[in-house]
Amino acid sequence: MTRAVLELAPGDRKEIAAAMASYKDRRLRTQPLQMACAGSVFRNPPNDHAARLIEAAGLKGAREGGAEVSLLHANFIVNHGGATARTF
Image 1 (tube, rainbow, N blue to C red):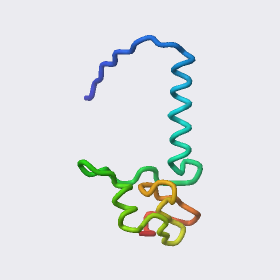
Image 2: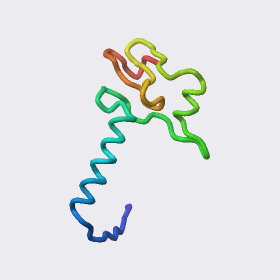
Image 3: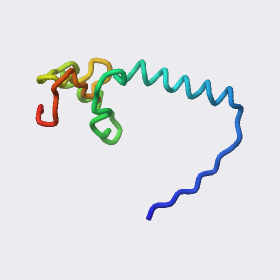
């Protein structure tokens, strides 16, 4: 069994809503969430970022069938249609 105890502090609704909108806007600008995708695929290794490593390997934008390493964020695999787990 897993348990969690959360301690919340009251806050200003407008400030909270503005912060949430800002986070959502950033995600929409930096992640391909408007497309069918597998989300963030690889875990970040210690002291580095998987997306940076994928991009450094020259794989950003690489495509196999309908699957593509996102041009927006290299740690996202987007499905342009017909991609399955068997694609790679």
